[in-house]
Length: 231
Image (cartoon, rainbow, N blue to C red; front, top):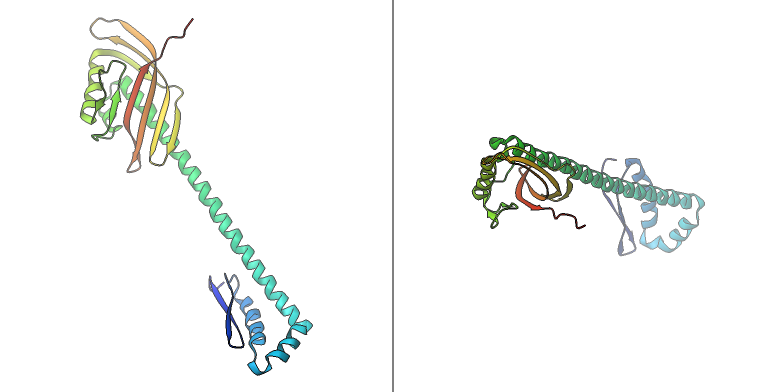
C-alpha cells in the first residue's frame, strides 16, 4: 500500500467519532471507505431519512460488508506481520546465543591448550587485563586478585611443571547476556621440574568469561581437587 497508517474519522451530525485506525495494505480499498463515509455523513438535515434508506438498501449493505471484510483482512494481515516479526526476533536471539556458546566453547578449549603448550603470548590474549579478574588454584593460600597477580600465578605453574597436559573434555556452558560460565572435570598431568616426578589427577574447574568488544575473555578461573570416592 501507499501508506502504512490511515485514520478514518466519521462525523454524524455535530459529533465526530474516530471509527478505526488501521494499516492500509492496498490503496484501492480506500475507495470503499470514502464512498461509505460520504453516504454515512450526508447532510445533517437529511440524516434521519437518508440514513434509514442507506442502511436499508441492499447495495449499501453489500458495500458496508465489503468494507468490513477489507478491514478484517488488513487487521489479520497486520497481526500476522507482527507475529512473524516476533518469531524472527526470537529465532535471531536463539541463533546469537548458540553462536556465543560455541565461541565460549572455543575460548575454553584454547585456554587449556595454551596451558599445555605453555604458550604465554596466546594465554595472555585469552584474559581480560582488568583489576577484577580472579584465580584460585588447589594450592593457592588466598584468592589471586587482578590481572598481574593472576598471570604471575600461572607463570609460577609453568616454572614448577614440565610436560603439562591440561584439558576439560566435557565442559558445561551457560551464557547469560555478556557473561558465561563453564564447569567441568579437568584432566591434569605433568612432571615436577624439581624432581622429575610424574603427577596426574582429576580437578573440578570453573571458568567465567565476559564478552568484551565481541570477544569472550576469561575473568575468573577456579580449580579444586576432586574428592576421592568413599569406599
